[in-house]
Length: 365
Ligand SMILES: CC(=O)N[C@@H](Cc1ccc2ccccc2c1)C(=O)O
Ligand SMILES: [Mg+2]
Image (cartoon, rainbow, N blue to C red):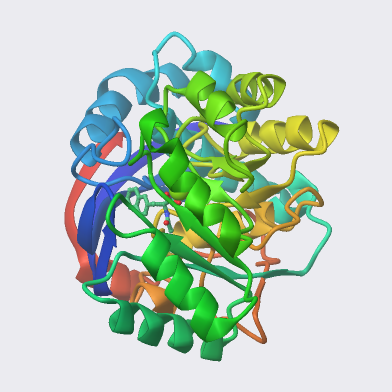
């Protein structure tokens, strides 16, 4: 496909409520969308991380720079989505920035064929069960009120953010109040192997999994921890490629994987990780990074692949935004419907996008 124009649009969308994790508190989704205009169609994507490198090493300013100076020049003027990874391989790291570029090009390509990303990836479901991620709260009563609200909305699974000092008691309180609801926790790397005995206290609550308890580069530590706690370990930040997934599985460092296309360089690598996990009998689910509808739509398509057997974090738009740059994705009887339109199956609403756009940068024309 011939690329004619690449635009980067900074957007700032307020969250309905602060989202606190072990690595910080967010009140706004402050990122950028990428628009790729080709001779055949145009494609959209979003950069999933934040202005600050707290969840991972990438951040808005660095991603804009690496796209402008190192990635876009390697894919213009002519490229296919399948070629992007090889064309940009010389640039070390920057998986989230690379995912943003590949996805916008894939969206344009699929739109030009009139093919949905679900069909392209091999989705086998028209709707997927939705889980929800609940942040760290100021008190247990506040947490229980939030969980009660989400269960009333129909969410199929509850995930609690935890950190040292906010773990066993909140989990106990949710179990005591809501019984055997599907329940898991996410530490976002907040613990060390020295906390193994403390983390073992979570075993009494029959959690589906404990997500990324240790640091993202500690595959070996997760393998050692897995010998000492019963709750299945799920990796998120540690898995940036199919190779990482193969390594973690081979070392018994995880029994579940949270796949986020943004974290692994895009949907093509996300599918490769799905295939590696399925081949080893490892269940996967689709994680989230408070995406706008531009990221939420294609994530739902990925979550519809056969190996995604656990509810993911692709919640309804209203979980995070009172208003989004796209039409909202809604929860219906605990399920989210997979978009069926061409490409990612969703696009920004021009008027709303204009209102939320804080700056535009033309990277190529
Ligand atoms: C829904 C959920 O818990 N997501 C992530 C944490 C997260 C959440 C929001 C983010 C926003 C910008 C950059 C990184 C982010 C990571 C997780 O599973 O670990
Ligand atoms: Mg996580």
